[in-house]
Image 1 (cartoon, helix red, strand yellow):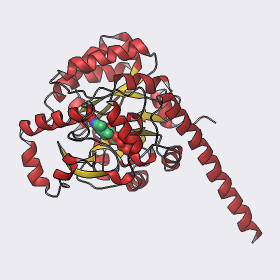
Image 2 (cartoon, rainbow, N blue to C red; image 1 turned 135 degrees about the vertical axis):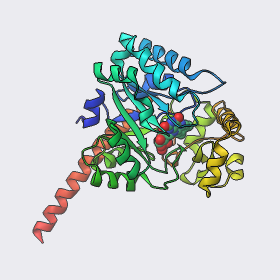
Image 3 (tube, rainbow, N blue to C red; image 1 turned 30 degrees about the vertical axis):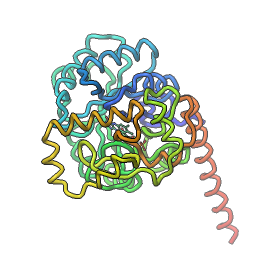
Image 4 (cartoon, protein in one colour; image 1 turned 30 degrees about the horizontal axis):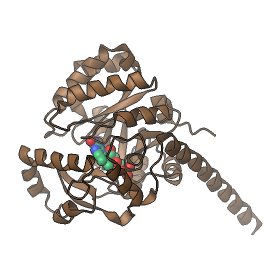
Length: 350
Ligand SMILES: Cc1cc2nc3c(=O)[nH]c(=O)nc-3n(C[C@H](O)[C@H](O)[C@H](O)COP(=O)(O)O)c2cc1C
């Protein structure tokens, strides 16, 4: 059985698994590995070492097409406080337009943390009209989903609060969000994100109408991921109770419990946090703490991590991870179907 869905067809991939963007870190080799394994690899919005993200993203795209001929995507965080977002929204589509190979392979842009409309400029429009590029936006709530669909995105990534990384102030789980979306926006292509790491998770997302899952935490614990081994090992040794929601760099964030997490309580006052966020210094210091963790200091840094770490107990190759999840999902769907039939027979015999 092959799990073909609206999303696998739209993105021209074999398996309904998309890599979640994990900026400000490099996920370039991870992107290659996920695309090669039949999922969709996604480049992150990179902001480490005070590097210029446009250069880094462009170099990463070049690297990807040198190492795979499969489709891939990229993320732009369009938050108003993201200093390079407008530049990326203009320069990346312009660069892709002038590079035939990248133009052919890069078929997915996922915007997040701000408005999808920041991407709408003449370079993007030209690119969109001349390729199969799809534009998805990350939404943590039904209201935002309705808004971005009106804005004209091709699909949404529905992400709940159990996932790793920065979260919205809406404390909605992926399970609730997906049900809301399927009821109110049944025609919209959806990728489910936040809490997925197993075949059971994939099977449940598909059963609820999502066309694919997107995973961050599970893919950190892979051989090909660029994160430090200390970060990867945390994923395999942690339990579900080892993460919590704290005040992150841009509002609430789900992180691994360490010194940083203990000293930063859960966000309670949105207005206060918003005021603090206007300080660039807070953001620069925050990114330094994220980078600390990425480079291996998981005791002092900010370790973005999702509850799904409690479902992972090994670090292995991306192809093993993806193949296992797909095989298990197929088994799970078959078992569920058979169980329903068995129950029907029982009912009929009563
Ligand atoms: C280390 C890390 C970094 C992240 N950075 C970003 C980012 O730059 N942009 C974004 O849209 N989401 C980011 N996220 C959120 C993920 O894209 C995704 O929503 C989340 O990982 C899904 O939940 P999971 O971790 O349970 O798979 C990040 C998550 C993690 C764990």
